[in-house]
Image (cartoon, rainbow, N blue to C red; front, side, top):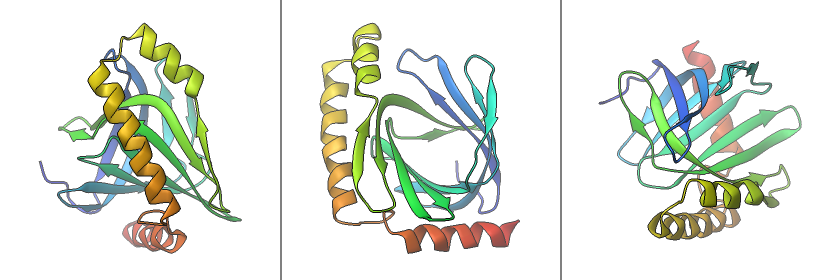
Length: 174
């Protein structure tokens, strides 16, 4: 299914056991090709699996990949652009939403481009609880290495000017 530039979509994340994890009520499609879908949002309502909700504080531009096991959120702050990367399944899209499985491990890339691996305890706990297959663990390990290499190399989308350009495109669609 091809997405139209400027269309508003819902984003849903799940856990490995197929339980709903989180819903972003609205994201605007900026680009789609055979490799990825780029969306942006600001002040978007996010609903947690337990029904609680909150609104995003900063605008963001997110790269969802069709063949990589991670997604990358460029977060636009007054002091600069930081990145939050989720280890996750490649995305799928149907009439309901853009969907992926969140595999707990996250990489935070600060404005100074330093990176921090987050949620390792949650990853180990869910790995045991949901019995992640060895094949998935191998894929996630390889994809984490690939992601970290892209960060170090400043490859797209890890360039503040790229995120800023996409955000300006988003603002022109509003």
